[in-house]
Length: 416
Image 1 (cartoon, rainbow, N blue to C red):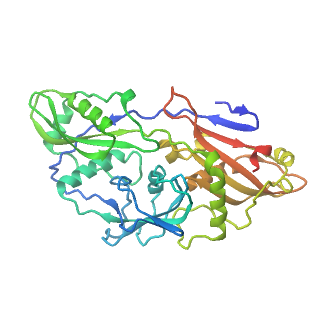
Image 2 (cartoon, helix red, strand yellow):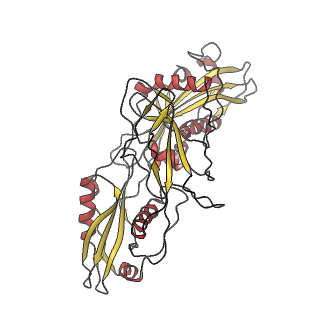
Image 3 (tube, one colour):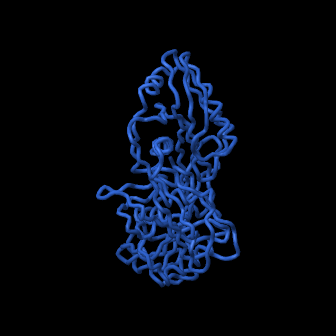
């Protein structure tokens, strides 16, 4: 696929076909004979605590079951806590989302910030800085609810790491699953997508001896009422070949996320000020997931004296590849921004002085990877304080589910 040239901006488009709304193949019964342990995260009552204020935590913002990585070297304790640290923009969007330091002995937390990137708090007139939110770990579920939550974890395992398949269904549901004659999916054109957020629905149903399905209840998930109705209608139209009846089986659907746009025009200056403040006053808690250390000498204005556009164009040929779009953000259709300040030695060595990404540090890491794979040539003089902005977006193409595009800028457009 060839690069798309538009003025000084260079962009590359990639079409990725998203998986359709799907149903799991093997219904999981509520009366599974094998004990199932599933972990969930519940917000603590104190809410969001920031350096310059506090906020209550909206009840509708919850992590689904199964996103918590389980340590291998000890059991999970009721005293364990997981924390996210972030800033909150005036429009309510969370930014610079990272996992805070914790005694919980697991390190693979990357999916929690990704899930939280689509969350927003109520707008207000000030930027909240250095915020922290804590969750307690719960696993004391009755077998019936544990089975429902395990179905949730099973289905979302394709979107998160470290999710293990729960126990197999009982003989009755498993045997019925082998007799499936017709599988019906909801009308995709009628499903309502949420920006940057997956939706999922878990249905309980019975199968009679004639192969007819009776949906008894929606027992789990997060979705709009309209989507729940469409999924229930689709499950009810499933048809099985005649055989032994099966009761209290589970089936789940996942609805892919809609595009979550990033408003660079509104947020850019606010994000720059946050970046400067964070560099001058770093957080006391060392994050598990972090961008490289940020120095305090961040330029406020154009670097035209130390990194003139003409010289930069002679030294650097920027390279943008679609695969540089952060994979998790692409899967959730989350757009992002990245900003880098860097130097180039006369012999062509690159040094990144500072970076930040919105809403996730992964965008800054991706932008740095893009810069490092660019062609950098030696020159008579070094360049310092060069600035690069990258916007990670999805092209407006109704014919494709996901079209991630990286729009970078060279020359004059790379300077503020």
